[in-house]
Length: 318
Length: 307
Image (tube, rainbow over all chains, first blue to last red; front, side, top):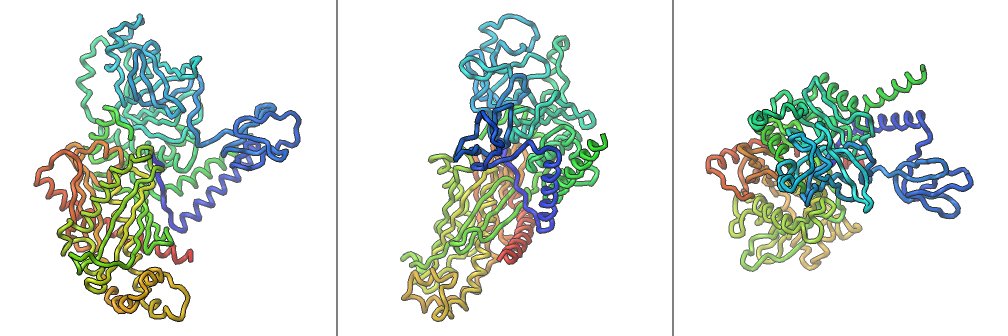
């Protein structure tokens, strides 16, 4: 997805700049450890001995200099630069959303914004009939009935193989094909690793999946299908061509515009922030399409300043 | 261009049927449009148009040339569109050529009319570009560059060209006193044009008076209606365009006259649907022209502040 570009008028520009400056000040109050650098910036190391220069750093004139744009991270003696706008770096256990690009023998290949394609093996996936058994050649021939090319799939990172390829698994009812909704692609650094990445927003009837790789799925709520219920499977194809109700669709659009807006502003995506933005737009009677307009853009930035300021106050009292 | 899964396609079709598209717009609503003028100082007129995530730049350069011997009473307009590889990996190498030529041809048809026609009703009046019949005329080189592509490139490019032309013509109005004063001042903004053919300088000065009467309201905007499923939508994103069956681009001028028409996509259209689309496009163009006018005013105000 392309990032939206918003044009502001003069007063809006001033307001946005003030809000962003505020955010900068607040961030520096919270922690001075995280230092943002651009290429050729010097990284202060206070003449410590035995500093290990990690990724994105080099030595120049006796100083440690950044060769990438990002945030300086320190682990004991190691200093490295964590880039922001780079591809996604998977970790074992991450929940990701991907798109099937190829069906190969016994495996699907998924595009997940990693430097290579992820692999989902047939054997690391629960079969639709829910029975644990060896995968046969017939199963292999019927792979396309599970996932087709271009399908959007939710899975978990299983690990790296010896050859460096990334393997996924989908051994639960909550993983699998995603339907009736839309996929948004945002920079991966905006999604923080949390305990919960699947969210059922009950007040909206919407499922929200924040994939760690920056793929965000927003769709109509679908109950996970238990294997017992699957006995009467002829029930499912019947409502396959049912359209999403208008009210739910409005909510989906509102939530996805919140995600688009927050990612355009570069704010981290948490379910609270997304719902907050959607609620604010609702309470101030902003039309769904006007959520991407300049006025609400600036308002969102200002609201974020207030939120962080009040968080900081609370912390101080504690 | 990634494909869409069956579930996403169904969702999109359902949304269009329910008059609520994936970004909350209705079927005939445009994304927010913004304009920056004078982005290329070397050109006579240039503009950057942002339409949602679609970004295009258009520039117009005017040169003095000779009219074609077969048409001594007409100037020349050359339209060339380029798709930058920064807009997407599919435009790398020769990948963008097909789309580039499709866009150029579409704009040519919508703005200039057919090869043989180009008489009354065409968007740009070629006879007004002639300075002395058979001897000297303006050659307009219109170049467009697609910087970021998220659908509806044709409308964005036409809007950019319309804005360019506007600025270009305003400059010419300013330019006539400049050229009179050419002998005792330095190098004015438009001196390049005059120096290019020094011996014709006298003619240029004379015919500049006529140039002031150029009718800017004739320059049309293009409204593309994309048919997805049973309905048609305005200002489609690239995801919506991937599902289109056919698209009709109608160029409409300020008076609500249709100046040109192109149809893309393989599927056929019922003539009654086509007529319906034209009248809808005409209606939509009124809003678009109003938005463009206010944006032009805002952009000019911003430029004045800057300088």
